[in-house]
Length: 203
Image (cartoon, rainbow, N blue to C red; front, side):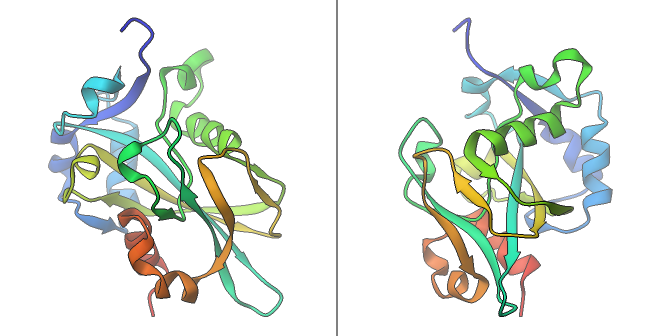
């Protein structure tokens, strides 16, 4: 397919030389900088990569956190629709916004990872709030076919206001939900959301 999307991937061998990741890995500096600066990063056809666990697709996974007037910490949460996105995740609740980094994100010498993360955010939501950003960890879930080919990078945006709106039908039922409510409805969350919430908002 000549027009197939080319997405950013890293060979699994590069990651395993640094160390093992399973579930949530909080040591961002140890893993992320060597991965993003590796000369082994490449853009490959998405179709082939979806079934090749020897490569990991790098996926920014952005959590939008807001604390209301009562001091309740909330995350922007949505239900994945059945549109053009990842069918295998259909109808699960998620607290992470993001997607693949495409070859187009590197045009003009741009940093493809940062460019792709902000492009995905702009496609999926309208973010009207100022925020403070931190990188919290990496996600790898080899327990299923989707998880085996993706490496998530968890970014937390701490927002000053709740000014967030969904752009896409794929982000149905979007809104802020308290951490306690999310934990009470844990089984409905996709695995990456469960891992991120458990690691970042434990207790």
